[in-house]
Structures are given as structure tokens and as C-alpha cells.
Length: 270
Image (cartoon, rainbow, N blue to C red; front, top):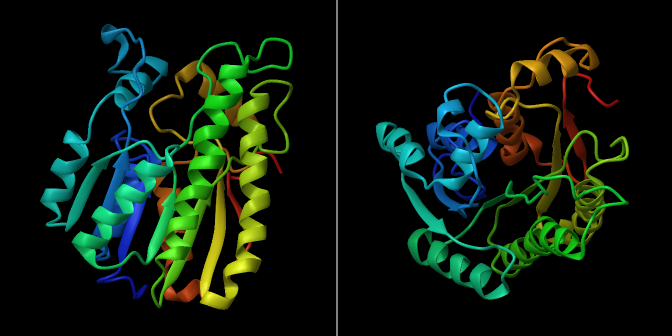
């Protein structure tokens, strides 16, 4: 099926984890002939190098601490046209600057995919233990950064517009933990609907994907065994499952789909 994406240009944030959703979307869009601006920020983590071969937090932390080298190798193998930008989307100046560079390179931005996110990696995201810094850092990326990216996309709009935000399938169902992260994602779902109403007049659609437990390198066997019984379809979500949904939402075939939060979760957290 022709998705009508060849020659379009897209910005995708959060792309440096080779096993991640952002990198997988980048490769999927490259195969459709989309010109890509890939935005990432190295997130320093402590990890045990001896444990990075197996899925788990050490593998995940190492991937997110790195650059785009491995992802770029795969893009070059596809003969993709792409631009890599290391940038902090929580900064207004950085957002303005990255849009300038993308438009200078590609002339326009047709598709914006807001995949980058921040979350506390420790034990400081419950109502009893959270800190001001956790609140500020999480909302700075997940809410302020996403809104700044959308604002610039709308200001610099062309004749084709697709915005895809990212939440989590459990934004309404976290069991007393990750309170700040879940609140930021619930906010994302809310402003997805709000902005969709406001920009419909520009022929821009705005939707949100809410993944379930997705194997981006962080789910070890113990966690998989715990979460699989909660997924009616009986298997972990793969980044490619998310990428296929993003392709549809970005395509001409989704021209009348807007303001939606689409769970790609195998039935988890219904």
C-alpha cells in the first residue's frame, strides 16, 4: 500500500537508542522515502557494562547514554536522506534553532513525531518521595518541550501537516508510582485533543500513540514474566508495532483521523 510519504520531511525526537521506538520509526519512515531530521540528547546514566548484552536497565541506560552512530549506520545502508541534531527540546532557543536547520536543509517540515521523554530512573516519583527537580525535569521535556515543538511546527506549517505525540497506555492507570511521569503523559493526551481542534483549519492532524510494555531493551526476563499475564494478546509490544501505527497516522490514509489517543498495547491497561 502506497502511504504517500515519499519526499515528505519529518522530525523525530528521541532517536539514539538502536532498539528504541524513535530509531525504529526512523528506519520505517526512511524505507518509505521520507527525509528525516533526527533529534536526540544523550542522557547520562550509570550502568554495568557486564550486563548490557541482555535486556534490562543496564542495556537500556547504555543505549540512551550514547550517540546516533549505530542508528546512522542503518540509515546509510538504506540510502536514507537524513540530518542528525543533538538538541534539548525543553529549551525554546534550541527548538527554534533546530527548526531553522531542518528547514534550511529540507525546505519544510511535513511530519512531527514527539517521541522524546523524560522519567525519573530512581525511587523519587511517588507522592511521598517525589522532589521538585523530578517534577520540573519531567514536565520540562514531556510537556513544555512537546508543546514548543508543536508550536514551531504550526508556525512554520506548509500544505501537509501531521503531528504524532507519545503517551503511555497506562497514563490513567499507574498504581501509585511514576506519578509525575503519568501526569505529564495525561497532560499530553489532553493537549493533543485541544491542539487538534485548534489546527484543523490548517489541515494539520494531531494524534497520540500510547504504547504498552514495549521491548526497547529495558524489559528483562523477570519483568517480562510479571507483565505478560496482564497483556491479553500474550506478548510484549515491539517497536515495529509502534512504527507501523505512526506510519499510518502520518500517511494520506489518516487524513480524517485527529485528536485521537491510540493504544498500541496488546490490550494492556484497557
